[in-house]
Image 1: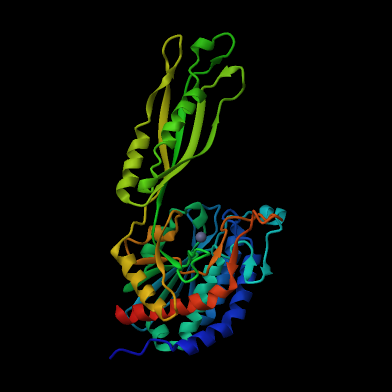
Image 2: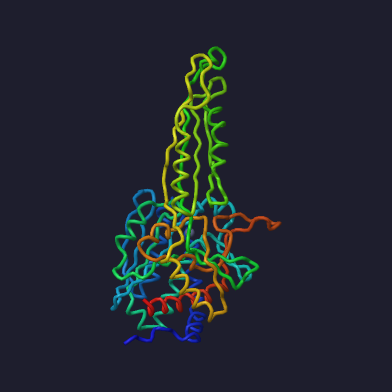
Length: 417
Ligand SMILES: [Zn+2]
């Protein structure tokens, strides 16, 4: 016999409206805790507050130290169900704003009309609060479903720094019978298309690289011809790197930083550039790796005296694989799309350039992202009087409709699978 799991829409909405003030109080507390990735104590304080908020829903806590001891602990909350199905929900604790920057830009909780400005309101403390709203509402309005499902909640302590250990951590702990990994990063929606929210079904992968040119140092006055100028070599090389960008294939190369040389009376012996590249599909990604590495070897800049060439070394520093479009994500999107019709929404499958923890999970469990509230200007703390700079904010009016939608879609997912 199938238990009736679908919550009644009217009851669900009323419950969520009722709980919104408590949810916003929780968000306000979370935003007040600076949780910049490198602020270990702040991240851990936020982790404790998060565990406290979910404890009344019956969740037990596990803290897992991050591989990098400078970062805070990852957080895993579990509520075992009495059935065979499980759902994983994913968020992160850290933000990109150091405490000094928040101070300098007076960037903190500020309500203006429908917007709440502040660090992490949108990325991703608003997403964490969305998880809380959804679970609280399911417990109240669909108790049989809430009790049947094993809920497993994961918070990355260092998502903004591409923490490499978080993927394996989640994979090891996914409950048997996990039907979906739901990622609560922000929803995508164009200002002029209010009925067309974007849910993320694919994300680019990213490889960080370093190009190091070793030349030969020499006295710039006495032995100029003996030198092999590493900066000149690097400068000749970088346009080749930039030209590897291919927008038609969704491939972007970014030269991010350069440095080289020491003082002006030396022919510089060393120059270094760092950057990254991104692509959606695995084939493009692998090809980009090969083309970048083909730049390694002896360069064209040589010592005029004896032909000693500059040497180019290409190093791949870190890699996060792409999350390509796939059947599992498409099936989940379809469930959210069907459910949205009752709410007057027509969502779009979004391919996003930025990474999320979805990149680490899509190949082991069907993954859908963008389930958080709506807002804008992630990673920006600046504010200018002429409005050309607006800091990160979340839209208050997006919480209840999105939580309603998420609850209905989760109920349908559980009923169908
Ligand atoms: Zn995020």
